[in-house]
Length: 96
Image 1: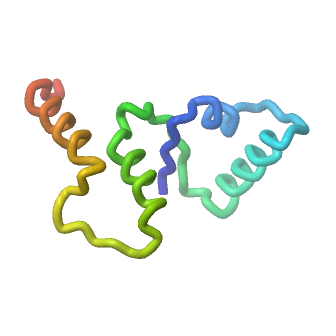
Image 2: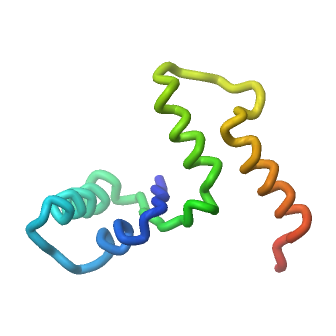
């Protein structure tokens, strides 16, 4: 399982070698421990918020819908992000 974060500071702290005695570093050390033991096949990666805009918006919207939902149409909270990504993919194809 891969975890994506839009906080480069947190990702750098998890993979950095620094230690400390603050509450922040206690949480970072707990994350390091879980990634090394319980989630050994997992990875934590930095993804810019602009790149992950649809997922970020959908996650915020999910806070207002505490029960399980199945969407048969694109939710309005992410439709603009998806449309922009489709436009970009069409006009700026990846080079091999």
